[in-house]
Amino acid sequence: MTLAHAVAVVYRLESAEPARMRRVRNMAALLLLPALAAVVLAAMGHWGAGTLDQLLELDLTLLVPLLPILLLGPAIADELERGTAGFLFVRPIPRAALLLGRLAAALPMLLGAASLGLVVAFVALYAKFVDDLPRALPHVLAAGFALVAGLVLYSLLALGLGATFRKRPVATLIVLLLVDGGMARMPLGLQLVAPAHHLRVLAGLPELAGWAPPFRVPYLLSVAYLLSLVVATAFFGASRMNRIEMTGESM
Amino acid sequence: MSAIARLTKVTRLYDRTIALRDVTLELGTGTTGLLGPNGAGKSTLLRLLVGLMRPTSGEVLVGDRAPFDEPAVLRRIGYCPEHEHAYEGLSAVRFVQLMTELHGYSASDAEQRARTRLEAVGLADAMTRPLGTFSKGMRQRAKLAQALAHDPDLLVLDEPLTGCDPVSRARVLDVLRAEAKRGAAIVMSSHVLSEIEALTSRIVVLHRGEVLAEGDVHGIRALIDRHPHQVRVVSNGSRRLAERLSTVDHVISLKMPDAHTLVVETRRPDDLYDAVPLLAAELDVEIDSLSSPDDNMAAVFRYLTSEQGVTV
Picture 1 (tube, chains in turn red, orange):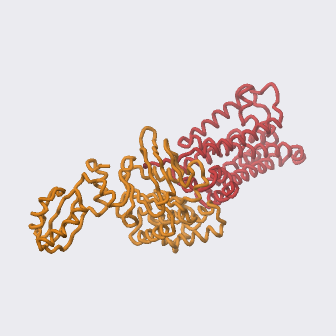
Picture 2 (picture 1 turned 90 degrees about the vertical axis):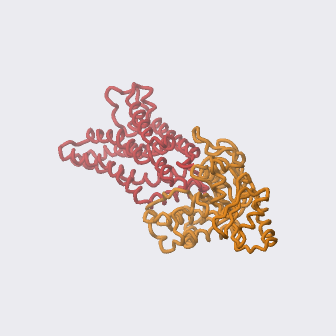
């Protein structure tokens, strides 16, 4: 059985579980918060690129890392705790299929919600400046790409770290939020290691006041860095999965 | 017996606790009952067999492959776990179908197999209901169906009859007998002796992580000759029989709970079974019944697992 076939079956297994899909929907709904905020801000008279960037900042540095972690960080721990992983681990399939199947079940909804949120925020905040729309469009597309890249990356990180710290999902949260978020605000050097920093580069957001590095990281370098992180995380997660043992409670 | 699975000097530790100690075992076609009290190491042994864990030391092979390191061999294995958790929102047929698809079957083949197996375990009418609505016994049968649906060579069942009512228990046992007849090797754990007794006389007794004994009931009995076996003789001449048996060297004690019943404790039950009819003929005593309460596995198990009873 190929990995793709196994992933497809696990995806169907996940999608057929109403409780799990409800959780995905709830998390996806939270990704619409920037859109809601944009509508409220627009109604209060806050318009334009500055407001959009502030919302993107919120999106990229808080929601995009946090929601995949909350959703997928405990995924493997849950499977192990409930024992359902035992049904999958005794099949002749690569265990990575379990990670990728869960990712496939969650990601479309997260990406859809994030994209919709961005479009709504963009329309709401530029409604008064229709002439500026073509000029702002590349920035919004770049932000959209950063959102997609961020969600994919953090979802994989959440699954990979969740497989590592499987009995302590909170560790995943700490690693990602404190280390990544913290490093993104560190002086040059550490700042360049943090995915959050490169996502901001991808989105074309202005440098954080007071923490700007002395040079601007080339866009393609950020893309390459994030891509290499995605690949490394996928391999890391797959390797962790292969080492998981289901000891159970009773002997 | 050609071995389908083999454990060689397997030890498994949980932190500092020894779950299995130096276990060597061969499992061939037919049914093997894994017997032992809670905490004996049964589930650990089964998890090692299906690749959910790896041994701390020693070797576990199914065919010639280690199940933890070589998932391809899992194609040959069906596993019914002890816990009752499953995918609560899925219907039984969908659950079994998807699990079977993971063995490489197409969706339609897998669904057909799922339906056939669910019917076989008596869930024909309930197969479209979500597993979350199932009773414990029904879940057990659904789990059994998913273990069977890909026709495994090695069927590993962890307490599969827990929660089953008598009717479904009988049905499950029929299914397992059919699987054994098909040529599958079945390993089934239980701490309820009658469950294993109903399926096989080949048992492995685990106690505190060690194989205490293996073989059939009588074979195991032979291993525990330090323990007295009771043989109950109902006749019209209990007193005369008692007088003669009191001089036999392997007889330990004699009791007469009533005028017609003689309970003989012996270290060599087979010799006693031979001797009693001959004595009865000699003394012109008519024997109504000759039985051993120990023939029930419960007694053997009690002997083997009690602190004083360990003899192997």
